[in-house]
Image (cartoon, rainbow, N blue to C red):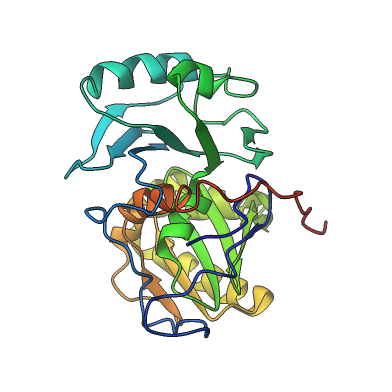
Length: 272
């Protein structure tokens, strides 16, 4: 199980081990044990919500396929709760995991998302859903579901550019997409959906390869997971890269509640 989960920058996952491998970290070729059909030790029924700039997707324990509703610049958290309530009427769940498209601090959105309407900072999700809620950065949630041991970088190629690193079981949400890249534009301007449309598929793929190599060298990771909706446009993977599955976001959301009794620990700040 995941131990010491928390809603800050760093989350300790050090006591998680795949079955059958004893106390060693799994190799990148071995996926962590997970089956949506196999109930977690807590026996909680979990609703996982993946908030995106185009769609909001949701999946719950015992459901075979996710549902999705339209998102966009008019989507407020109150509207999301209302529309989801209609879409998942009749679903049973005890707790909620939310992947939020922006920085998260102490389990709450720390900044309004650029691709959605305002109102997310300070919104009481637990009150709205009438259940316990855990909020995590959306890229971090997909990274959590993609992790296969050692040092991993996750890059979410979607509306924007999500990024998260897991080093030896420690989850570290990043905001690499907003760093400057070329011609007074950010990495997100090139690798996000706007860059894909502006550059064209061929040039966009070259930038994905270039940026992946830069991040591998700078962050000293063992492998990179390329996820998000636009990852499907990559045919030749960059060195040390693998394609992730969008379903891993739901896997990560289920894993947030793998240890419902784990105490919240003091948040560690990432060095600036």
